[in-house]
Image (cartoon, rainbow, N blue to C red):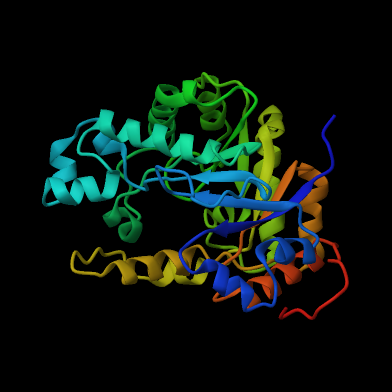
Length: 331
């Protein structure tokens, strides 16, 4: 029997972050409690623990990930040379220049995440090169990526205690898109760690269907995909709850990769696809009733923490939840 769903928000600690939160008139603890949330899902992209512990708030931890990793794992030097002109560039991206070194970085990242004593870890399952982000001409199938991702995970799984749940997250790139039940089945059948499940990112799943125009259509589509999973539906233990209706942009941008584009331009392109906006329609409650997740992470984009609070309140209202009284929406 599953316990009551816990509602969290995403949180990424960076230097100066405390000052940014204090602009809302609250500490991080007060920010979370004021929204009636049960804690945070902490982003840990480091190989060493944070100097300040978030153990009292971090119910879950999102691990580091590399959108492009298959070439390094396979030691495909020709593919790597397309995107990295030197070993220094290679090391800057992966933390190493060869697979075993990269696996050590993953182990160190897991160790840093476990220092927060989380109930669960989040692991992305996808592969997409910088070029493919723009061309959408993917070199690898979902099953190929998922199979390799399972092998990578199994190489480091012994560093994760059995009582820590590992939730694998879907993206709209090749891998665990969730749109093919057989890929989902085969991926989980290969895993050594038994305490596993799915962190279903609603926006990422919506990104697999550029024909969606409304939140209602998005909810209908998500429920249709989940129903097709059959018995694998029970693996969905958490939701990264956010809305992405980017079909118009996806169908309009030029399928061309500019090697001279800046990192900012590349990031802007990804954000135009993956919007991370709050749901505003009560139709989202159908997702919560149908899936009954253990964790709902209000994983939303924001410009500052006042904006973040407003977005969370908007989505909580759509979910039928009313935060504790006190303070206005801006904090």
